[in-house]
Image 1 (cartoon, rainbow, N blue to C red):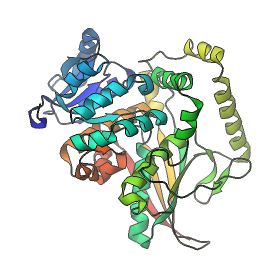
Image 2: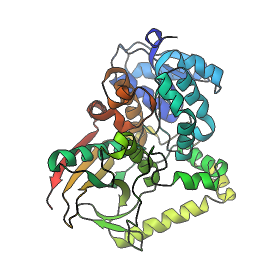
Image 3: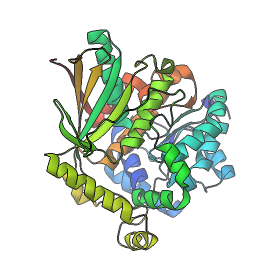
Length: 411
């Protein structure tokens, strides 16, 4: 089916799940009322229940279409042919995601997801990137809380450093100040599935700084003290972030995609941390996180956790949403041979939790692909990143109260 003849502009696949439902709710309350869209999943009755809930949120809006699809290529290919953009919130992507990607790539359908599973993304790039380019399919994985804030903050700061100092950027340092919201059952299932299905070699390869970049970047040296902490002016005492590898992989892919690294600078690197009060709390954070990661390596512990946490499709209750907040600060250092290199700072605030942000991000990214001129559109297809949607993406996210504020620092 020719792209101009497609029935829908957006289809949300996995709309009965936790993140999928939040995405559908955001579309209902924020996107243009004349948008042609549909919710999709395996169960028609459950999809009808979702549509009934959406109708309450916005009674004046036409109902979305309902499209059932199974997790196989034939069914998903039929679905992909009906839409310009397909948003997939069905995970774990490691075990369930490939048929959706394949269907979109082969039918020239743009694709977005909210995975954080780097080994799977790496495998999909290696397998489908060339074909996605040939078929004009824009494929953007990790387009939720992992890794939109990191990628957009880095892109914004690199541009600011170039504008204000006429320099490349040597390093972007991100500090997660607050990330409230808990974990959904799908997130925890994904973590357990990765440990149970991926080899140690795959996990090791995915943890390398330039794992997803099309070109190799500068070698990494130690960025923390022997205690595993780092103190950065204007950011404070920091300890490595649990999602640093995930965010770094996307930021570095953006670096590699934009003029082979030259747009950011050939010495560029990205590091991400969590803000802690002092050295003691930083050491306690590292110890607690290390103990938790060690514990879930043991099958009996995972068995117990699976029975005591949210089931897939469930997550933190609505009454907790008002307490959620995301706060991130960052500093960019210009690439110059000086002990007092010029610096710029950015701060990102979002008055909601990570799953709400992910729903908003997926929906607004789809609108950018549909409506705006971007680097992604110019490239025409392939496995891209949130930052290739550029300023139009940031501008649209402003409607979801996503705010990035920047300033030049004294040096």
